[in-house]
Length: 330
Image (cartoon, rainbow, N blue to C red; front, side, top):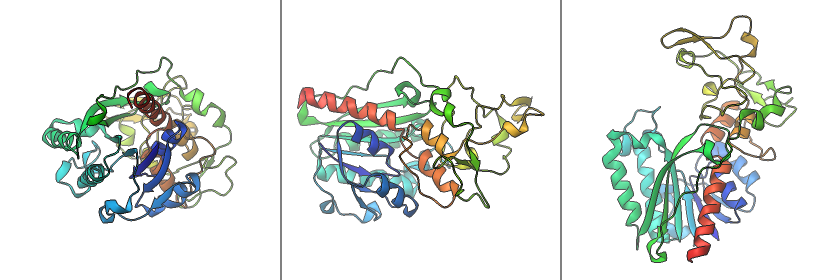
């Protein structure tokens, strides 16, 4: 089945669908810092580098599915919470415009959990209605999933809209959580001894022994130090975010000590153990394979690509479920 990927980023969602046997025929990504990474890792996909608002639907190939995560930073709990009135929130409408014109068998749209906040309830209701009524209409399934339930060693809650075209006469059912939760030890236990720091002003280190296995250096903000940022080896990681300075601390370090409300500190005598996870470790936690190479000059760009991605294993779980249900009903 042919897939169009919107707001593709580095292509974590795309890779998950490719592993399920889908063919990503065309993708769109506007951020020039991502282009090389996407093209090197998805060499069979046409990458359109224009802003999605400038792309007429006639330039997009016919497809069986549309997937993507509109970059609604306005919905994020870490942002200004300006909702759909914020310009970047409007990118949802471009997704719906293309969906309405192309009318694929299904679509998948992913976004942050902040969109479930009560202040966004009216906008969320409007978006659901627009998805459901696009073209001849879609039977909409909507859920918030935690990636740790789908073979991803990370607590990461994200909202998914999955729609099945109404003439197919069925509603998508989300896959059940997997019985085993993958741990940090499973994901990065073999990487602890060969990491290197970034160089200069957090630039890529040419002496990496493992590709992308370098970590951001520098101080930690009072907000970062306001709570524990260490997870143990037998646990799942905190959410991998899009900023290197917010990267979790490596599990080699002991849990941060409580000082007072909203203040933690590193254990005295153990300060050298408190380093941020490397770019490659974050990629592993997002379940990218080691042969998926990230290209950047500043390590901040590497963290950003990885933190904005849909974890590959979660994407694959959804893709496999979509494929199986389509095979039954189509």
